[in-house]
Image (cartoon, rainbow, N blue to C red; front, side, top):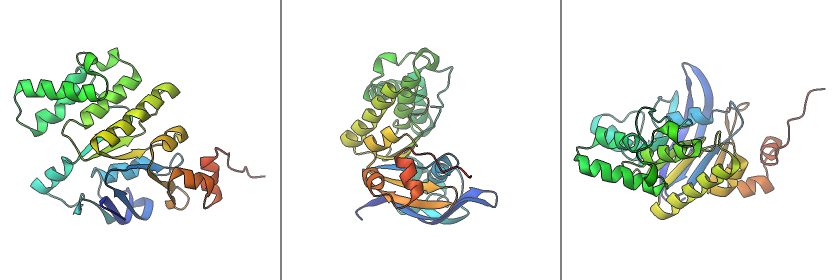
Length: 253
């Protein structure tokens, strides 16, 4: 498989000594839109948090460009973190700051650019997501979809190679969600950014995903991997079939 940018090997993750997922093995290929899916409680967001280094794994490792994100220290860790940007599910914008000020935050923390450059880059990133005209608005003054776009602009502030998006369509109406999907595809194709997206929205999965892995809370592992179209048409088991065909689980008699 060509040019993996992220590699998980025998990865077990959880909190304390309680595993949520066990012995995961997968790669993310540079330039693809890689989607992590599964039902509620399957560990999607937990996996994302471990992939960005918020928590150390219980066993195994996650590496980005060959560097273990859990054990990297000092300048090596800083260099690794500069390669990634994150959009959290709520957007996580600071309500007392304008959209431009929110986008500037990573630049102020990790660079020593002059004020003029900070303003210019913040507006350029907002322009990429169609929000340049709203740069001076507070988050409360724009829609939920615009807040998500602004959060993506902030995640892109340092020109990362990889963008992690946690439930980007959550809480959005179908039209706004479709517009966000189109933005993800445009950024992926125009800039070559690798996306790792956590979602359970079928419409988004079929629109954006190059490849998916499906997590299962019962087995605490990956039960399917491949293109969403193949998993829909050739599901490996009943759980996968029910997910892709929106069928309820059988009820006990």
